[in-house]
Length: 358
Image 1: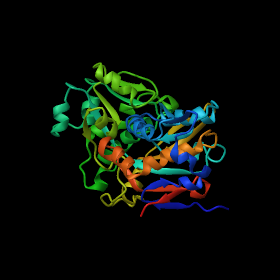
Image 2: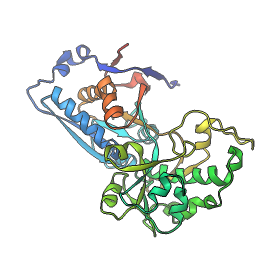
Image 3: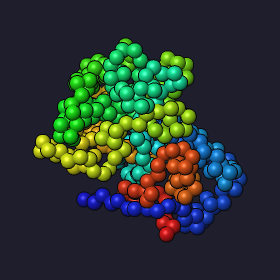
Image 4: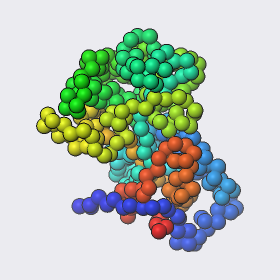
């Protein structure tokens, strides 16, 4: 039985001389080539930046980017039979869960993120939230604002919004005393109050003030039109689109991997990750099968699927993504922290070698 291998890497460069006689590195080939990338909506801006850099050094390559919610992105390959050269997911665990072993057998964890509340110019009570006069859930429950999130069945940001609301109820009311907090009555029953519907319909349809769209970036147009006041969003998306946002407590924003206040109730909290795992959401994995998503820190993953028709170029693109220049684009330009070193799952299954620059 193969043992899972996790390898730490600082940055990557493609070993051109070992692949196809080095012709891939030159990229000055006789025929134009297409590199097709399916990716999470929250990767649209950084991948567009990487596309420009990659095409400058590969003048005969046309990088085609196609965004959707991460689950929907993966289903394009696994259910619709489409082909692509790279899949980038906002939740790395979807790759092994939905693609191993038929469609992929390795991936790289390359970036982190956190959940925030984005808000439009002139949103009611925004100044109260910014100065702490009111809590965000008090404002949302007041019935005077609209708030939105993406579809949890299609997009990790959607089920992460639901997890945030569950964790907020636990942190601010259900288990507040365990963390030295005074239970806030406004957080009592918060999850069902904010996320409308029942069973597998909960959080899937726009009801009253709650607005739902397929992927997280679809919410931006609603906000720009003034239809949506607030949205559960990735911090990087707000940074990239110059949207004002309010940061959430580390206990609920799915960013932390370190310690939280000790629980005195005997519950099995082991740092933030242990508390995050107290929340869970069932999503529709296939038309006949559901899958339970457990709360965990936000980590992005990427792979070259087995159906890729251009694995050489795909690996070169990953080398750029994981290089110092790629990390600067992600972290410095796009506000999406790179994981340095990155993490490879099953590196022995990668179609082409990458090497470490020490």
